[in-house]
Length: 81
Image 1 (cartoon, rainbow, N blue to C red):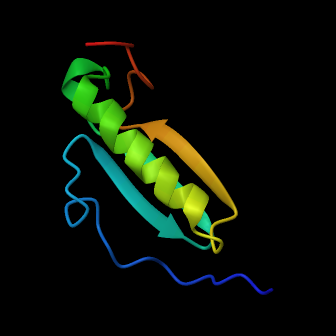
Image 2 (cartoon, rainbow, N blue to C red; image 1 turned 90 degrees about the vertical axis):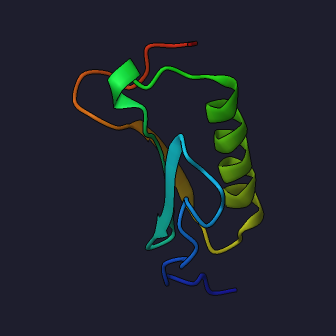
């Protein structure tokens, strides 16, 4: 079965996310922890959003891989908040 390469049109805000950014481009899902003021520290909401995004990634056969990254240039994540 051929994989689709089109981008998903649902933005992170349409999914109800506030702590992460999520998009799919060219069969790659990008989940970005978007809390650079606190060095992308995880809180319960951050984890809930990441879990939801990664489940969507898992369940979408058009996605070939996922990348999890952090916003800003100081840290991927400082750990738990």
